[in-house]
Every structure is written in structure tokens, then in C-alpha cells.
Length: 142
Image (cartoon, rainbow, N blue to C red; front, side):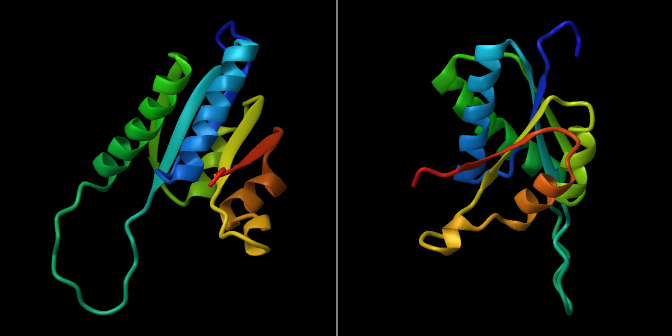
């Protein structure tokens, strides 16, 4: 914990819901003196059939999306102490090990409105069930 009042890991996917999760995490860290680790997972999409060969910097694109989400949240909160990590893999499979020694894991939930919006997404549901630390699931205010 590097002499701090704990560590908060926040999952980021570039969606408005995950930006809200980053804002929530940095506000909680500001109040408690905790350290924030923003983590983004990326995977090469799987497709069926033939596709043209395209050169894509998956990791670089993920880092750009992570930086955009974190920078947006930091601009609103004034909090500065955020580590940023980009890792290849499924989001739940990346977040659980990242939060193994954390004090809190924060993820956003992309609601669909109405009754469906009350349900958790697959990643948030998985981390709630399997994380070793408390989990906060934030919902997009929109």
C-alpha cells in the first residue's frame, strides 16, 4: 500500500459508465487518502470468416481511451495520484488479479434503462461474485 490509506482499483473501458466509476473512485480516494489504480483490459476481437489484414495498435488504442477517461475525471476532481495500467485479456480476468490486494474495486455498469438497467453487466456481476475485496458498482447517471 506504499504508506497510503489503501488502494482503490477502478476498471475502465472508455464508456460513460466507466468514466463515472473513475470519478467515484478518485473522489473516494481524495476523501480517504487512498491510492487509485485505473485498469483497462483489451482483447483482439474474434470474428468468423475472412477479413482483410488490418494493422491496429490494440494496446495503444486502449491506453488512449484509458488516458482520456482518467484525464476527464481528474479535471473534474483535481485528484492527481492515479496509476494507469493497460493489460491484454478479458476485463473480469484482468480486474480480479489487479484487485487481489486492493481495499476496494470500482466498476461502472452500462445500464440499458428501465428494468434492464437495474441488472448488472457480465463483468460487474462476475467481479462482485469473485473479488476478494469490497466492490462498488456505479451506474451512469444518464
